[in-house]
Amino acid sequence: MKYWLMKSEPDDISIDDLRDSPNHTMAWQGIRNYQARNFIRDDITHGDQVLFYHSSCKVPGVVGIATVVSQPTLDESAFDPQSRYFDPKSEPDKPRWWQVDIQFTAKLNQIVSLQQLKSDPALQDMVLVTKGARLSVQPVSADEFAHIVMLGQ
Image (cartoon, rainbow, N blue to C red; front, side, top):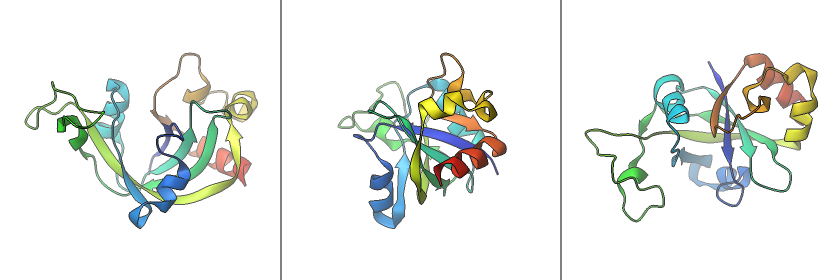
C-alpha cells in the first residue's frame, strides 16, 4: 500500500462532495500536470490511501481521508469537448491523461492546516512542505500519513 496527498479546491470538489457523491466515490480526473499524471498512471493502485487536501481557500490543509478504489484508467474528460478538462491533443489510442476513482473514508475532526504541516518537525521532509511543491497529486510516507491523521483527530 502506498500513501498520497491529493489537492482539490473546495469550490470545485470538497471532502463533503466526495462524502455525498454516489457510493461516496468519484473519479479523480482533470489532472493536467505530467508529473502528477505519472504518479496516477504508474504508481497509484487500488487500495492506496489518500490525504484529501483543500487548496486555494482561506485555510488550506488536510481535511479527510479517502481510498483509491480503482486501477488507473483513461481520463475520459480529456476527450470531451464540453469538458473544461478537454485536451485536443489527447487521443484514445495515444492518451495523455489518466484518472483513478477515490472513495470517502473519513472526515478529520479538525483541519490540519498547511501552516501546521510546515511547522511540524515530524513533517519537514514531506513533499508538500518543500519549496516549490505545487503538485496536485504527491506521495506521502506511511509515517507522515499516520502523523497527519493523528493531528486531525
